[in-house]
Image (tube, rainbow, N blue to C red; front, side, top):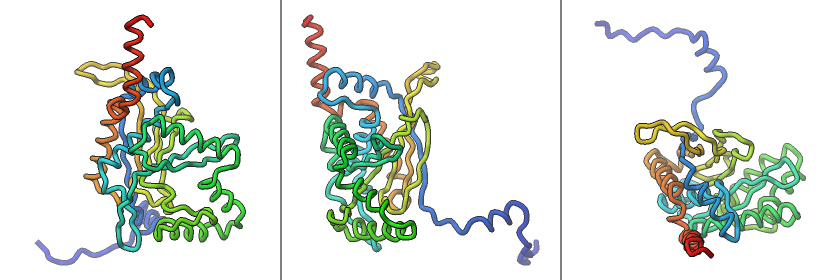
Length: 287
C-alpha cells in the first residue's frame, strides 16, 4: 500500500459550479416539522365559539402551545449578544398577523404568553389588529412606518442599528419606535390562511429568536391508527431553528411539549374546560 499523498486535480462539472456559486457554510438555521392530529384542537375551537367570550383559532392554540414549550424548555428563553447569554424574565411570543386592508404583514408581541389563557391571547391579537387598522399601533407598525420613510440605502443600516439597540443592549426607546427585545423568544405565523399545508420560513438576522413556527392549513389525511388506515384532520407545523440558540436535544423537547399541548388543550386551559363542563351539565339537565 502506498503512503504517497493523492495528487489534487482541478474542480469540474457541478462541483466547479457549486464552489463558484457559494462560499463556506455560515447559516445557523436548521428545520423540523410536526404532523399533528388536529381533532382535539378543532373540538376546542368549536367549544370556544359557543361558550367563550373570545373565539380562538388553531393558530392561537399553536401560539399557546409554543409558549408552553418555551416554559418547559427555559434554556431557549435567552438573549445572546456579545458572547454572553441573558435569560428573559418572561415568556413572550411574537405573532405575525395580516395587516387589515392591505397586502402587508404586521405583528404583535404577546408578553407572558405562558401565563395567559388562549382566550386572553386571542383578545390581545384582535386588539393589535384593530390598532393597526386605525393607525394607533405604536410598536411594530411604527417601526414599519419609519422604515418606509427612509431611502433604500439607509434601510439595512437602520435595521442593524435598531437590532443592536433593542436586542444587544436591551434598550427601550419608544420615541424612536425601538422596543426592548421586540420579537420575544419565538415567532408564529399562519400559512393556513392561504390554504398552504406546509411551508418553511427563514430567520432574518434582526429577529434574534431561537425559533419561528409556521402553522399550515388543517386538511383530512390518511393516517395509520392502531394498525388501520383512517382519515384524520391533520395540521403540519414547521419550525426554523437558530443553531446558535438551539441544539437537537432542546429542539426535540420543544417539539414534545408542543405535541403535548395540542393533544389536550383543555388540560392547559382549566377556565375554558370549566365552561365546557358547565355547558355539558346544563345540556344533560335539559336546560
